[in-house]
Image (cartoon, rainbow, N blue to C red; front, side):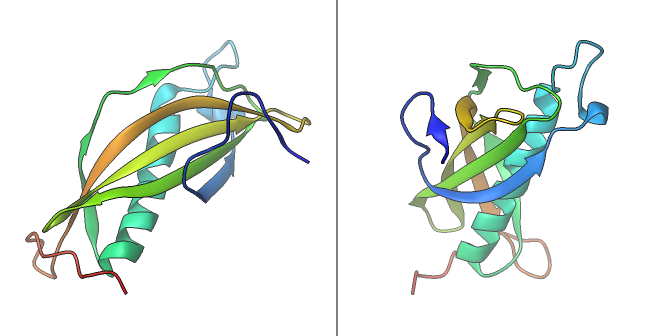
Length: 131
C-alpha cells in the first residue's frame, strides 16, 4: 500500500515512468527538465482525450521543485482538466515520486499547463463539448 507524505494527488494517474541514470546529473539527481517533459507528455495524453484530437502545449505556468527525484524513483504524473475554453484547456498537473523500493510517495512539483486543440492544418479548433 502506498503511503503519501503530504495529502493525496489531485486528478487521475496519467503516466508512470522510472527515473534512469541517463535522466540524472553526476550526483544522481534527476534533471528538472526531464520531469517537466514527462508532465508535458501526460498533459498531451489527457488533453488529446478531452479534445478528441491533436493538441499542443501553449504555456506552462509557474513551476518550482519541492523535492528532488533520484535514480530508481518512479515518477507518477496526475492530471486534472481544470478549465475548458473555446480552443484551449488548462490542466492542473502534479508530479509525485514513489521512492525507490519503498511505498513512500512525495510530491516533487506541480504546475498548470495550457493546451490548445488543433485541426488537421494545425490551426486552433474548438474543444468539443464533453459527453
